[in-house]
Image (cartoon, rainbow, N blue to C red):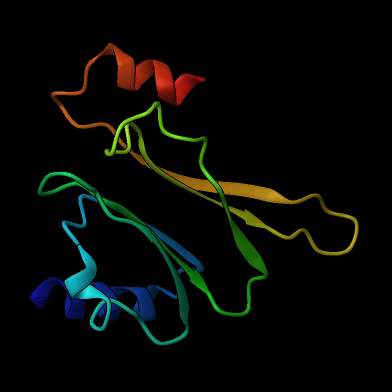
Length: 117
């Protein structure tokens, strides 16, 4: 997990509020090791095969919640690898939706269609 230390150092140095990552390659065995102090972690691991996966780190002070994805099209696998978080607007400002999306190079038209719908 050497890349985690580099990512954590950059996030702390640059003071990013939100960081999106694609191709995490995480699964349930990474539950203990991917958190970064001061950030909430939202993640969607690829199911059914290796690779893929997306994640969002959001500063703890930011009021936000994950938005549930549309139901899958009847498959055990997620057709679209994406993750969406609604950030609560302050004062007279509206909410903002932030997302991360990964399109595998071998994705067919069905996956593209699912994303756009």
